[in-house]
Image (cartoon, rainbow over all chains, first blue to last red; front, side, top):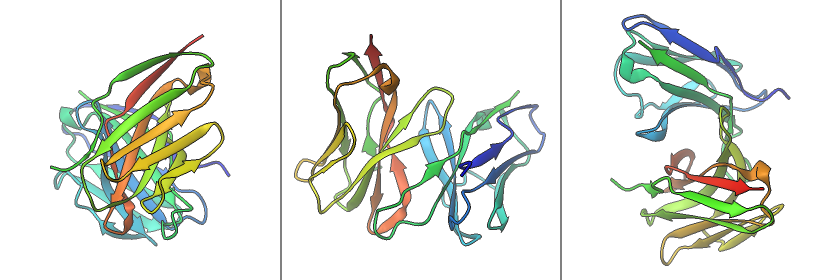
Length: 116
Length: 113
């Protein structure tokens, strides 16, 4: 399996522009997670989905952020409009879902976003 | 607020020595703990996990110890290798929601050849 796939790997944009980050989870995983990593705040969970349905979006910083999962193999995280403080590495992760603690979250390589 | 606590210390060890990375947590309702390794430019990689009803779990060259009395978690790496150099994060889940991970701030491990 190729693991979790994210694109783009790097994104540089100007303040006010719309940014779309993409994720393909591991096939067969029914949970998908979006995280943000910064030096100041570490690794933060933004939102997660189960079977394409958003379960917990309490970590989404503000209305400028939105996430969708139109099918089991694709998710997007959108920032509109982007601001310099959104600069971070954004990770997508997927899992079977933890019921017995025998599986866990597998992370993609991340998208490094820089907003100028 | 309550959190899994690391303040990004750096641990330097000699190749071949054993490493111990520590993590303190503050939430008594934490029920599942996970260690991740993150190499530069990559996503976190699962190392080992432990449920709150256990106090020790072993993997290949790694051991996780859980002390619920003092809310302390440690990762022991035996015979540390240069490839072990990375940032290590502990994470926890709370109150039965095993899908919501709370990550600590990480410890950087430097392995000197």
